[in-house]
Image (cartoon, rainbow, N blue to C red; front, side, top):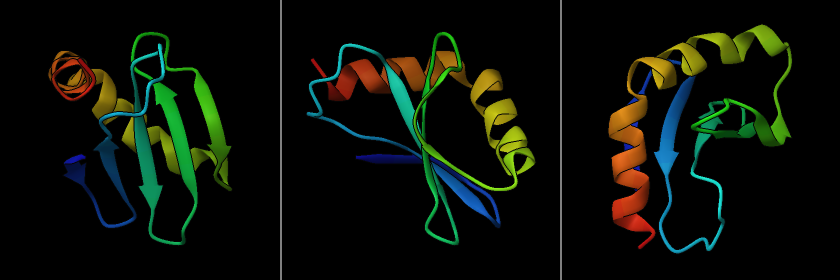
Length: 78
């Protein structure tokens, strides 16, 4: 598991050994909400957060750092 970045309300984590075919990141919010986001399509694969606008800043960070996150995902999930 690698925590790639964190802000006041959220942090982004990449897990290893999950066995999922879709490269994704986990966004963990301070209140316990969790969302899994596909790194290629940015589709929300699991979880929810309210209000939905809370996820925008984290997704913007994922977009800006997508290549690093993909590299880390594949490093942990070979």
